[in-house]
Image (spheres, helix red, strand yellow):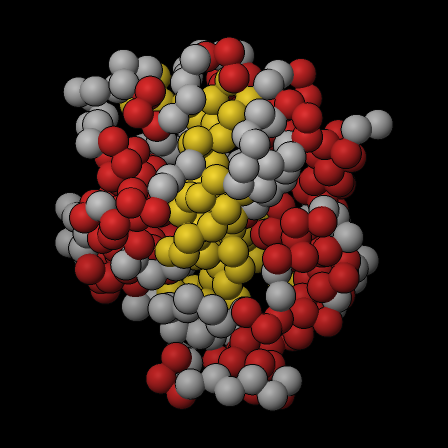
Length: 341
């Protein structure tokens, strides 16, 4: 069995595991929304739910893996769900009435209802093409079909700036921007329905590994000069942005890159809503970090989730229950970072 199939199989086990709990007769049920199967947030958040369901008595998290992260944040703020994939960039847009929240007048008010638990690196923006497409650099995407991410998603905003900053090309004028969700896009790329697939993900990504099993692929990168472009420079100033790289051979012999490629790195997190019990959130946070080995065992790249960087890039108020656990572990949690309710 290939490593990719083993990882995908593990993801399925994680998803099924969230349907079961600790066997207790009385439970409090919580709702979690995340991105589709195969995505980095899906793996992390499903693993979080599995650990909680197995190690925190009397609670069960039920996972729904559909929709966009920007919508999930609004749902959590309105109390419709309990857990969601947070992101420093999304929270920034929400609090400032920017990008996808520009027309949502109450977005800043809703953002005040969100609480952070921990952050982790989602990975690097992969810009993937088939080697036989003839596309050797971002300059070659002119006139092509490009997937930038789901409509109204933060990833689409960042991917658009990546392409435009490196090339000057604009979606709809210089190339066709494909509009669909993450799950549909991964399948469509495998079916060669478009030319360029952009996905912020840890490496190796199960989805991209699946493509590389039977096809030669190339990952397009950014130069140092690209990062100095005003458009990309502005993007890199957003919360949660870093410079990352993807090494040659990450996707095996079918990855044709001879050198590492640079791209935009990103941090996201697991968040909750205002009103979650301090005691419950403390017990959940404690259970997750004290059973982190179970998460790391799913796939090597999950070792990027580390207690030492749990508060990295965080711009959302930390839930008091989570803060209590971090302080018990000796973390110097800034008082201004912690929500008062």
